[in-house]
Image (cartoon, rainbow, N blue to C red):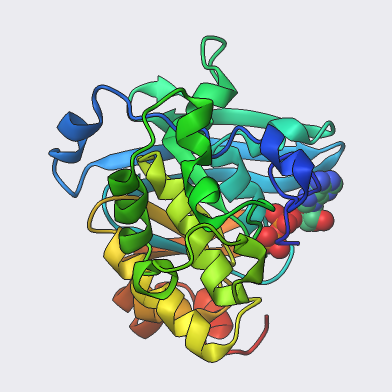
Length: 287
Ligand code: ADP
């Protein structure tokens, strides 16, 4: 299951406005941390296990996500990809039966520590979903939304920059005050990316962001993801192995039972995986 459970973040109706995920705030240390080595892990899971009731969805996952890279998470359906992604900004808190064990670090902070406010955390780690979910507002107001929630200044320049970074400015610059719902699916998804980056998160999580789109729109999103990694750390769940091979720097392969079977640079995973099971998966023997 890749689609998040219905929650305040996921809908495209008015309830979506209750979302906290895009209420991202520029933290004081953002610039400084981005100057750190690209090799630094920004997020790291240590022996991370997740249960839904009695059912285990992740099994002792150890995975370090590196700064300003695209990390792809692949694996057969039901192997825990979305669960892992949702842990990264504590979206699983919204699932009553979910229980998390182990550690998940954002740099030195344990994301599941008592002193961590999930809403504040989601200000640093934004999320883009499988189905574009713009608010029923104008294009401009969608991008401005997170800034307004945080009482940050909304200027035309900030809106333009976010739309440019999401590679959609040229297509919408003459219709900023028309409804976002009139855009095509691919444009809506890039608008959602603009909405997420307007508030300058450090990490952007994407759950199958192109799987509902046609090939041309998909290609634009893929190009965009690669560009985003110049400024952000991107973690993408995809069932599309070619997509992972095309756009990611590192690839994590989850297999049945919520186990991280292998994690390496993308070329190694696709050309010379260590384990036979991963090779079988990559070569389509199961999936
Ligand atoms: P993937 O993204 O790889 O398809 P998921 O993380 O969606 O896998 O699911 C992993 C396992 O956890 C599956 O067995 C799925 O049925 C279960 N699961 C996912 N979300 C929930 C939930 N909200 N409640 C109960 N079980 C869930």
